Image 1: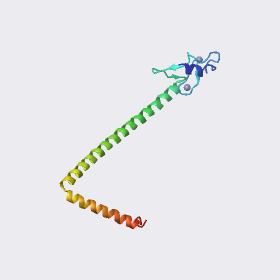
Image 2: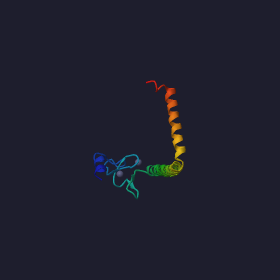
Image 3: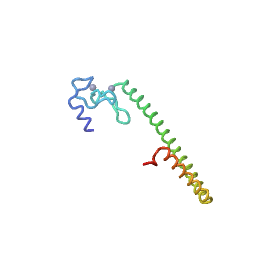
Image 4: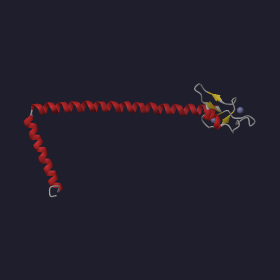
Length: 128
Ligand SMILES: [Zn+2]
Ligand SMILES: [Zn+2]
């Protein structure tokens, strides 16, 4: 990894001042020679057990946070789907109602118009 090489070019190992650093601790960024770093299976390097366990702990909480977020997201998606279904059902019902009772819909529309007129009148929109 070129960036990592560059970042340790002028450093020496924390435990061996006579050796150039070859890597850095993933957790505390201490420079380490090739011998001192403790690599894990996925390419992280640790200077000590403390840093290694610290990293494991952090990753564990990040995983838990990730899982919680995923759960929350799928719950929200499900809720949105339910809302959509309700909306479609209501719209279908309204459409069916409107096609079966055109007179009643006309009456409703007229009432709505009157209500808007009343609100506008109360708000003084009319006088403009
Ligand atoms: Zn460390
Ligand atoms: Zn060393």
